[in-house]
Length: 124
Image 1 (cartoon, rainbow, N blue to C red):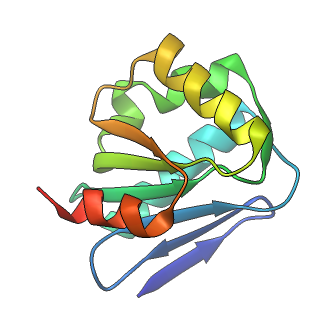
Image 2 (tube, rainbow, N blue to C red):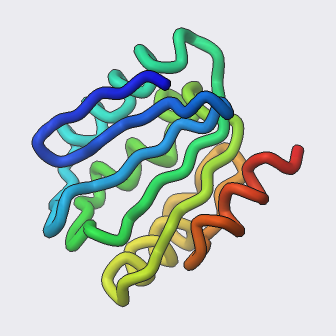
């Protein structure tokens, strides 16, 4: 298991090969945060894309530039598919808006349950 952390996000590359990303409470994601996330993810995966589990529960706002970055080619290089955890009303709005408006380049789905999300990520 490899791990990194910023003041907003904890990144863990688990032994099962899933990159798990969890945001701190009341996180506001900016373009700079998105680029930092992509850089750290790239370092953790050593150039080999992996399934990614991203818990958006604690995100209270994500800027348009950040959403655009996360749906773009640079960020898509770090994962094979992405499961977004949305268990709060705000994270549900952000997740639905992200999928509807930004159209990620790789398979991306919303989940309210981590067990189901991991099951989907492991099922190729």
